[in-house]
Image (cartoon, rainbow, N blue to C red):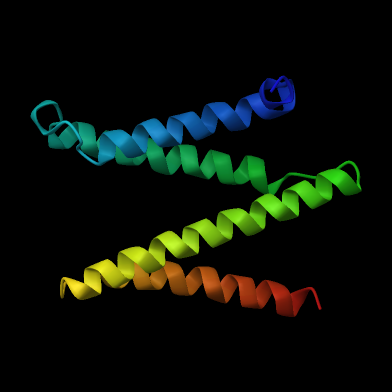
Length: 122
């Protein structure tokens, strides 16, 4: 647990927390307290926080084989959970006869990026 809050992980945790708070605010979970301008601000903050998070994660460099294995495992788990969540949303929307192209495009881009990545690294 001590390693979770080390200097190396602190910025990732802060940016991750900002992303989660902005996502919660942008869902309009408290409709009486969320005017549309605040929703737009939450979405803008989410995009900025996600960009910062992506930059921090993108520049990760393992110091040894153990860290490389941890990074690969966490990347694989993140992809798998994201793909499952998008697939569930896509099926749910399809059953309600309200499919949105954005979910299909997001899932397709994830799968395509994985296939391209495998092709590039072979």
